[in-house]
Amino acid sequence: MVEWTDAERSAITDLWGRLNPDEIGPLAMARCLIVYPWTQRYFSTFGNLSSPAAIMGNSRVAGHGRTVMGGMGRLEQEQHFNRSIIFPELLPKVINAVTVNPDSATAIMQIHL
Image 1 (tube, rainbow, N blue to C red):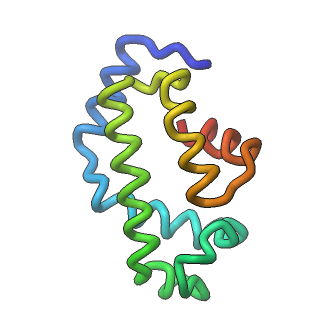
Image 2: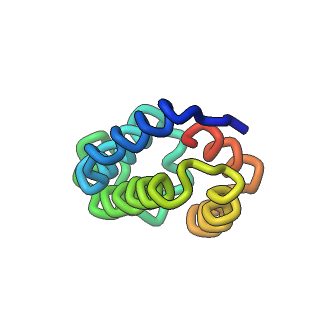
């Protein structure tokens, strides 16, 4: 587990304070599905993901992106990226909501957190 210095925590808090999850969430989620097309299999219930234009215009992709980024922002504010608190809260949601196996979900979360 990473131990953040006070300067790093301050930089993270400052950055998250300037971000708008409603703007970057949909873009980040769409970018993930476009750049890594194999991830689309986890989101088959989202409807048309057949092209970059379809993904960018998909309201379910945008909504999920807002949810994920909003949750990460909330966790940053409340837990200061303490993985021992974040993982138990998010892991069941990732596994159940997107039907990802636990090992893959853990790997994905370690990359993003």
